[in-house]
Length: 537
Ligand code: ADP
Image 1 (cartoon, protein in one colour):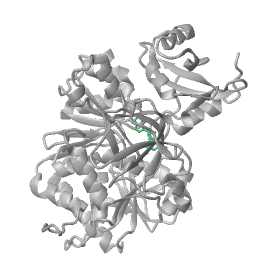
Image 2: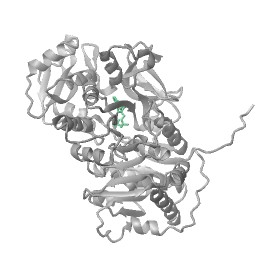
Image 3: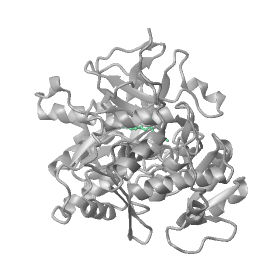
C-alpha cells in the first residue's frame, strides 16, 4: 500500500521562495574588502538570486551546466548559492587558497562554463586563466572599480535578466552544487550535491540537537563558502529566515569579534585554528567586546581540543563540536551530552563534548577493522565508515576512487575512530597520521589535544617520523603562546601524567607557527617532509 501524500520535490527553490515570501525584511550583512558593511534584505536577495537564474538561462546555460565561483563569503556568493541551482545549473565553489595550477585542474575537470569572481580575486584568476576554457567570466564589483574589458560586470549581468523567469521543473536528485575535497590527502576529488541532499541536510542541521538554527538567530559563517558549503549554514539560515552576516575577506580575530558585537551574532562556525585566535584575543581583553550571552560556536574540520571548549565556556560562549567532510555535505556527527549522561562528573562531560559526537538523524556510522565491524565499546579502533542521504556515493568522473566506497554501500572516511556504547564517535586520527611505534598505534590527536591544554601552548601537532628501532616515533611541534615560556622537560612531564610512557614524544620542536592547509587545518604532511631526516638521540 502506498501513502497518500503528494510527490513534492525537495529542491533549493523551495528555500529561496520561502525566504522571499516570509522573511523579506530580514537583513543580510556583508563586510566588503574596504571594511565597510553592505546591507540588504532577503527581499533584495530573493529578487537578485532570481535575476541571476534568469540571466544565466538567457546567456544560454543549460540544465546541469557548471558555474564556478571564486569568492569570499558575502551577499553575491549567497545569490550564487541559490540563483545558479534555481536556473537548473550547478554552483561549483572554488577554493581560493589552492595553487593556481590546482584551481585550473579543478575547473577543467568539472568542465565549468562560467565563472563568477570577486574583483579583488582577479589577480588570482589571472594566474590560471590561460589554462582554462571558460566561456564567460562575471566579476562582482566589490571595490566598485571598473571591470576589465572582456569580462562581464555582475551588476550588468543581473540587469540582462528577461524579467520573465519561471523556475524550471527540477528533479530533486539533479545536481545543485559541487565542491572538490581540499586535497589534504591527495588529488582533489569532486563531490556533487543534489537538491534533495542539500534540503535534507538543511532540515537536519537546523534541529535543536544539531546547530539549533532558527529564525531568531544571527549567523556568521567564518568557514569559507568554498569549504563544504560553508557547512550548510547559508542554506539552513535561508531556510529558517535567520539574519546572515558574512565576514568577506576579513578573518582576523579582532575583525570577527567586532562583527559579532556590531551585529549581535548568535551562531558562528569555523575550524579550530580560527578559534585559537579568537579565544586568545578574548582572554587578553575580556571587557573589550560585548557579545551576545550564549553565543554558539560550531567547531569542526579538525578536533576541538577540550581546553578550547572549557576556555569558551568560561567566557559564556558555547562550543558545538561537530564532525564532517566535504563528502558528507558536511554534517555527520554533533557532540552533546545525552540525557542519561547528564549527571556524570564535569570532567567526563567535557570529555564527551571533546569527542566528535553522535550521528545526526539518517547518518549511520560504523567502525571497521579488516572486514569486520568493531564493537561500540569505546576502545576498539577501526576505520570510520558512514552512509546516509547526504553522503557521497561516488566522486565526479573518478572511477579509480571506487576503493573509497565499500561494496555494501558505505563511504570510507579515512578516519580512525572508536565508538562508545552510547554512540559517541571519537576520532583518534586520520589513517595516514597514526603513528606506529613498536607494532602499536599511537594517536597523535589525543596528544595534540592534551598539549593544547597546557597553559603555555597555543598550538601543537604531533607527527610520526621513521625510527631505526621502533619503526616510527612521535615528534611534537609546539607553538607557545605570546610571551609564554616552557621547557621540553615540562611538556614531557605534563604528557607523562596523562599517557603511557611510550606514547610521549621523544622529540619536541618549538615553531612560530604550524603550517596550515587551504582550509586552515594543520598540514602535517608538510611537517613530516620538513623533519624527515630527523636524527634521534
Ligand atoms: P580535507 O580532507 O582536505 O581536510 P575535509 O574538509 O572534507 O577535507 O575534511 C574532512 C576531514 O576533517 C575528516 O575526515 C576528519 O579527518 C577531519 N575532521 C572534520 N571534523 C573533525 C572533528 N570534529 N574532529 C576531528 N577531525 C575532524
